[in-house]
Image (cartoon, one colour):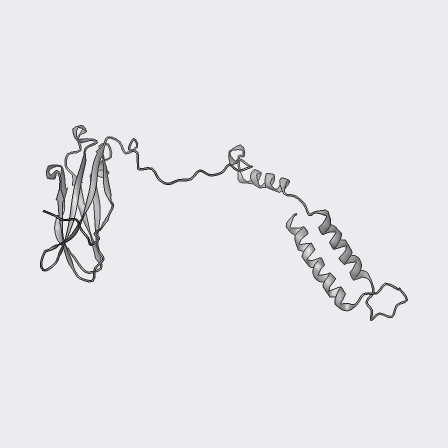
Length: 206
């Protein structure tokens, strides 16, 4: 009697779906992985051997390697649709042939792959956007609409830019001029920096 495996067995895929209408699906591949640093043996068992053919149902896998085994459905008939069978992939030590573990791969024959419902995925609903893409014929109209609703620079930004420009037009303290209003050279550098930042802000809203 086979006991529950404690060592993992890596098999892909976890299930096989054969389609009655799609002849290409009658031949599928199961990949066996050997994650260990020593070679192992494998054997393939099935709950209904008359319905399936497995090319090389037993063999060996080198250390840290993989092998592909071909599975063919021999009885793609309506009478066998919606019946679930199982393959059991058994792993053994290469020398002693002691069972390391096993993995079950479930199979099913469906009438049409289009009508077969896959297991539910953990999808999340997207939030509705303010602009619906379905209402536009091309990407240029979407961009045009986005540009029309983009807000322009606010009054404070424009006011700051105006103050900086006026300050830069005033003479510096080093100038020999009769005007009373003079500002230092360092203050002019600060105003020029602020003007540059406000200019960037204004251009980003264009």
